[in-house]
Length: 236
Image (cartoon, rainbow, N blue to C red; front, side):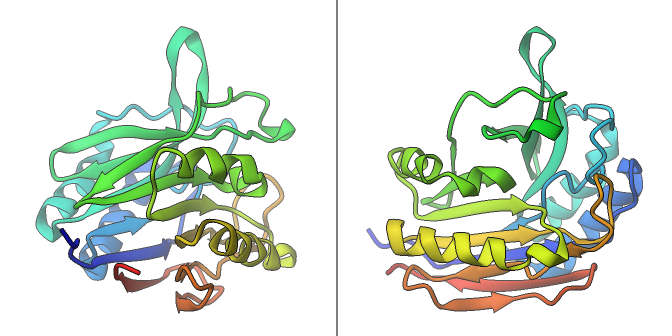
């Protein structure tokens, strides 16, 4: 049975460091505006790239605006946050938020040495949305072919990455997306941080985009915070 097309948006919201309530409200505005089935946000989008930001629980009441917006729009939002794991471990994670609430969908596997506070996730993950299998990744994961290989082994139609790169490295997510489309023959969706945030990222790259399995770009944002774009994914 053929799946219905999937409308997916990539967003690079304005982010206030540490201010989860304000950032959640901004995420909710994007969800309502985009009216996409899936809306993808960058790495640590709820806190900014502040490596000392407190962990965010999936049931944190400050996420309520996103839950409400997803309920209204019929969307699933993939948002970035630090989370608490087992045995006191912490992770850089992707939360899946819909009208019923939020849960941790994925934990970053290939953490950078500068992210020493955080433990690597247990492995790849795939999220099913309307029969589309979304393979999940966070930033540095996209550097390693073994990550998309392992994710593809779970069965994926789309490789969804939440990333943060400096403006001087704006070519990096493009090159990685092109490699993954060539190697895996799947859609690649990258939500890239824009504006400024912690960790020395005084100017993030932006340029969030959606690539088709043949490597062509179907939608791409500019470099400014506050932009979002969407695309309709079809069976190939």
